[in-house]
Image 1 (cartoon, one colour):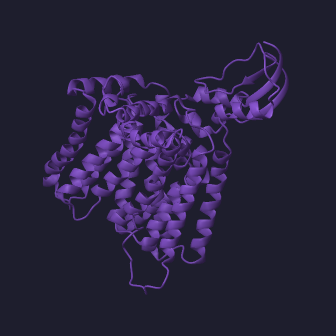
Image 2 (spheres, one colour):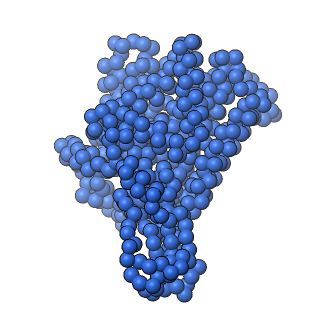
Image 3 (tube, helix red, strand yellow):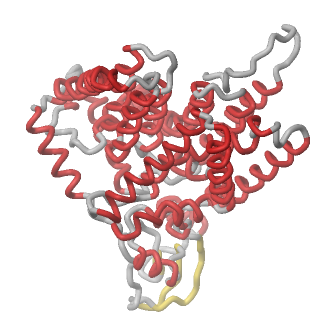
Amino acid sequence: MPVPGRGDEQLKPAWKIDGLKVAFAAVLLVSAALRIYIAHSGGHFYWPDEGRIRTSLAAGQGILQGDVLAGFRFDKMGIDHLGFKIIATLPVLADVLAGTHYAVASVFFSLISVGNIALVARLAGRLGWTRQQAFLSAFCMAAASSGLYWARHFMPYDLALMFSLAALSCALETPKKGRDILLAGILSALAFITYNGYWSMGLLALVLCCLKSSGRLGQSPRIVWLYSLGFGAILLGTLLLTGRTIPGLLHEYLGFSQSIDQGDFSEGHIFMVKYFWLSEKYLLVLWLVSLAVCLKIYFDARSRSLGLVIFCVLFLYAVLAILSTGVHVFVLYGRICRQFLPFCSLLAGYFLSCSGVGGFLQGRRTVVALAAVSAIALFNFAPILRQRFPADFREYAAQRHPEATGEGYAFVNAQYFYPAPPSYADLTIEQVLERACHPLQYKPYQFEGFKRSERERIDAADVAMKFVAVSRW
């Protein structure tokens, strides 16, 4: 487990409890408990893309039957998020051996984002920040609901973000050695093949490797070569494992990228703010205030480490906004915006401690600040903890009303739909027996491929899931 920060350690008696370490461990434990809870409260396979894990199940079954490589061949594992499907084989194989139905896999993937919280603290340490700044950064990361709600789904986003943050940790290592750059390339490649949409984090890791090379621009070609060597090694391993050729791999990636056309390019420059306002509410206000204050601190004190974090935010924004709104080649989704989470959390942690401007927020005021962030997090977490999903709603309604069967009863909106709610114009509802909010009424979900007009249509309609008694169809 990464230790939060390394800039202000002092020798302490062996018997004395390190309160900051205890608080850091408590944050991780509470975060893990929340994720395990939602992972076991329903929602698996709500998104059609979660079906990718069934490919991993087939590969795992092949391994048990003695045909180790057959399940990984290119004709069985598509190029889309290939790394996720390969890695998912391990927890799914454990499920097969244990005789459980994705129980191990659900816990495994739900806890990945806890590792991301710890990695934010590690990044603060790499930047040379104090232990308090590192803890507050991790705390702000744990308070982000957009870092929580994917824990209940079999999706590659948290795993890819974990590889990306580990790559950035290597990129920020000082003094930098060749193996750090090589490892940054390896981890960036793992992030890319796990979730292709996080390619920008790999590019950022390469840029940071160059910026952190003690300002010697002459080293850049060597850095690019070492990084590319690590990145290429993972791609080569993928080719060998799946039986692909280089032209075939490039052709598949090109075809896959051209197939992603859901969403609206024109929103790119403001999309992140819209998404984070709906997912984080007043935590977004904290981030924006932190960015403004940290910009002032940077220009006043020229803090190189703080400047790097600000650069990461501005770099990602510029790249994503230009490629979406500017040239219409990369559409944005909520999951893409999650790349900003670690950097916004670092800025918020720095702002809440602000040791560089006279120790702002010390003692009781720190407790008040943490209590305020916790209150915002609880408010944002509440709808996630209460979420109901179509499959679970159907099962619940059937158990509550075992007598309600046949043509006189029906489910309304108890399904995944895209891009618009289904029509029930021919249905006359006599009585609503059960009702629950549809997952898409949790508005951050609407930022996964729905255009602005489609989101407005969902908000205007009654899309709640219902089990009803009907008179006719």
